[in-house]
Length: 299
Image 1 (cartoon, rainbow, N blue to C red):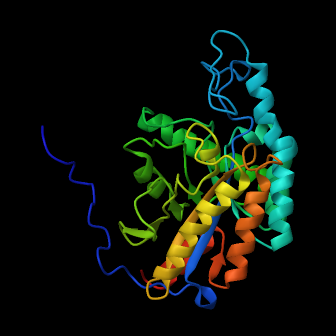
Image 2 (cartoon, rainbow, N blue to C red; image 1 turned 90 degrees about the horizontal axis):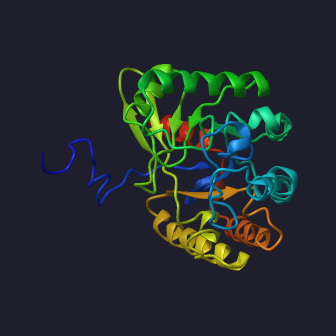
């Protein structure tokens, strides 16, 4: 078999993307996604098949419990979360928490606090793991388990889904069949939402991004200081503002409590928020809010 798979779309919106009207005439809808993975990382101590290898260093300990790695992840919930939330609160910004179901077993207080502050909970799967090899029945059960855990803990049903990089061929269909999801973010192919229409109920794809993401402090080391993060994300925003004069756009900034929450990096988030709010051209919103505004305009 040769050629490109028929469900791939290389054209997208082309030269003339749809013109969305964001609230207050904003040029760019900016979504901050705070990934909450602490307690859901791979760990022998949690009964997983191996230890996580990606944290402040790239090192997998094989065959023994990794106390070092576990401690690095714990920093995110113990210190990083609060530092990040204080910055968002100072600017009056509401964000989307991409939260793993298993995190609720260790830190239910975190979800309680976020919802009480007006933030959105998006589901990040049960563990921080790829789902690409899941069987359909296994994945259907996982989706139901995650929804139930979040709803029982917070009283709010998640309307969005985004797992670690690799979904299965069935993931989106299962989410749409489940009926309670408004959107998923397992796409990286545009600067605007994308509407899928299967049946009567529309479903939105809200693109995520790996470049405007604090994960670049790890592995790639594209970012070293907080100013590097703020500078790159700020450059992306400035260009989207320029385009947004005629065709408003969307921008996602991905964050992690254990990464941007470190004192040597948090200043980058502060600087970025200063730029966004100071420009008067950004609508900083939860992802469910962005999806609803998009659909309300029939796009």
